[in-house]
Length: 211
Image (cartoon, rainbow, N blue to C red; front, top):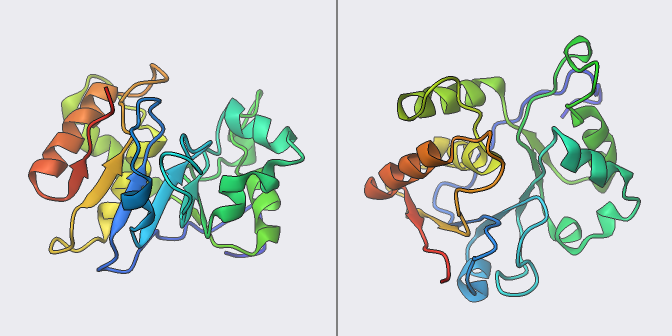
């Protein structure tokens, strides 16, 4: 990543081609799966990481942190954010949204990429920013499954990026804690349908939530 915060390059998110992969969502109903999650070569978690350190294990190779909206603004105001267990344990960070140009980030700021980079770079760990091309691809994938212009969730964007270069012969990614619910602006039904198609193709195994 270059030193110029105003023009960060979007690093392509790639994993070792044969690495086993656990993608851990944040549905409250996520079941106890600590052992199998921690056994994966790569463990990807999101935001506040539901169940981290307890029923979903204590390893995290990549932590995705939403860099637009009020959640990142709250984290930036928390002086102890970098001391949170899941942040301390993360080996790399993923920022799902590319940086908005300053002239487009107002009058009320929604993009906190610059500030997030300033916070995370001193850790010395890699920071991956998902590209606008990846967002375009996500919207094109979801558009046939929904009406209007879809606004993909962080979980969908990161999963699509992770599978982008994953060989077809690789073992399916193991997805835990995906409830396809939350902020109503995301196309949850379309994302669920895409995951079902990916599972049928052997790309992902979507583990059911605990009852």
